[in-house]
Length: 594
Image (tube, rainbow, N blue to C red; front, top):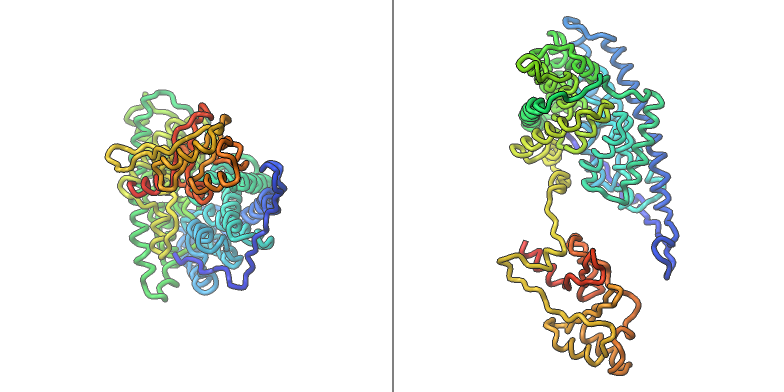
């Protein structure tokens, strides 16, 4: 997958709009900066624009499908072979010579824009993605519109935010805002869009951008619902779990989904770099050859695997396919999607993943109905669980997968089975293939983007880890004196001279829980202009030590040591109680021990 080389030219302005503050006012009374206002208003505007563009995108895909293939795809119709092959050639020429950055799904390119290019995605790339993906899916390629819609929204966000000459940091934060809007409009699922962007693009619950992402996702979804209505993406009958023993079948589905995800991702990561290393002229013929192969699958009797496949999912939910056909469709969909994606054809992985999971889940449900009819529940519940299973295992988005199933179906009665099956599938995929598929693609493209899965699972040290040394560590808690503010300056100097710290550190602890740390040199300076019997608390300035607690991340303390030689750690239950004293040496020693 060729990554976009679009960057920010040296002549491009990237001014920071300063935030003016008034000294002496508390934070909640400070004037609100222009950037903060923009983060409240722009996301709504970006969401509306992204929603309108994605609506046009979805309509164009359907129009192209009707124009190129017709309303119905019948086995034996030669159009099923000719159309994907011819359109594949057209798409290959467009991508090779006009829109080289339009390859792939769009998720990796959005992450690259955020972490490498300061949130910059060109309009040229956006239009290339729209045109290439609409042509490919309309011609029957087994790809989806959701991932490209995510990149389209990010491109709109990039273009709009740059008109306001924001700082590079703020420009990077606007990329996930547009991404959520585009995905919400494509899926009619704002919660899914929000969670996926946070889980896979941003990587953490960043409070500074979370509100903007929510506003954009809701705006994009509102535009989409205005055109397409409020009906869920899939037509689901009333479902319920009748017998707790059914959970065994869902556990089996989780195992099957984890294995299928390993096969699906393993095939892609093996074929993709090999095809990319072939001579440049072969990149022109790879998409049409993939189109011919996909069309041949439809011609020979399985047209359900062509295109997005949502109608086939609805048919599976209503039990219209037998279990043998379902397994065949799942396998052929993985093959067709792999051929289309590794050839460099623009398109996403969301829809094919849902299709494969739906077929797999329905097949498991059908088998249980045959073997254990007294335990069999509604077939549609297995279809929904299957969609979530492959989404969690293949795309490595376990939290998003649960809410995605609930949101696209509008059914909340099978939460427990979905969570069980998704968890098992995710753990299997994570155990036997630690590198998620999109991260593998970025590494193949020579980029080193943050791994969202590793960030989520990374163990962070906390302040209490530095305060209390585990067994076997050589570090000891420094016995820095903690004095009340009523202690005379003379005694404070004596305590500082006896302090075990080389700087003669002491802590002054006030009755309200606040504190102040200083060394013997600062004490001597205070003593030069004051009586030795003056209370030490009367000589200290108003500023106080920051409020820190044992459960807070340890790295948040580092920037405080530029102002304070030691920090006071308080008890959350009793603010006036002291848990300990923290020095920079303790923090560095703890990281060294880790």
